[in-house]
Length: 300
Image 1 (cartoon, rainbow, N blue to C red):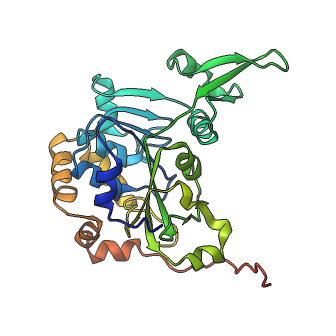
Image 2 (cartoon, helix red, strand yellow):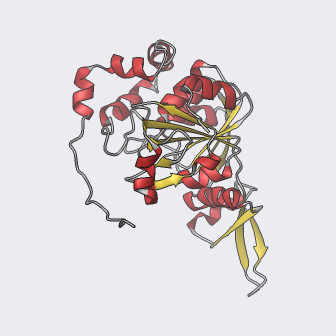
């Protein structure tokens, strides 16, 4: 089944007001282009869940798309706070629910496995029980000791950026692998954005890289440079300058709105966005080839 469509079509069909959204990706492969399309389509009252919200959720909150954020670590990685999200939480304008990384991923694991909750060892995040009533305790039936549990997370939609995918949705990731698989299996719908759409034969030639199987994917979108200002391993580097600039920009509501007007509403899609960044930025973010050793799967 051919699942290829435009990102605009995928967002329009699968993301609705009041949905719970999970934008996956850890350090790299963060689907910023999808976040921008959600803003352009002016979705409202979203619950946005993510282990590390990054700038993509600062932008969604600043654009008025979100009513609640569910997270573990929250910040501008390597720089400081997510200024807009923090301000909205402190002013009581944004609902929030905090977990440890272990807790957040455990929620996705429970959702992916079809379980009502996931047990965890007691960790340094035990203090979160005092502030988040979703943390509960059950008695281990084998030794009678308390076990901390968190409920399954079932997002309405997961958006996952990958290096390559075929037309049916079999998607491959390399480099740092985060919670993409768990998010895909836990969610009701899955949108894949990809640097490349390739023939099935390419996917089949290296099956161990296939993290997301097509059977759980609803839409496949060809979106080169989707992850900027984060990076996609092997395609372009992280834009550290942008992360530094965002810290100052997001502290000023007028500058933040001007950014959204120019770089989100002012461009029609990711292709126009990348072109607008300019050749100097393209060159600065270019990466050299660094191929892994070939793997011999054997012929028969």
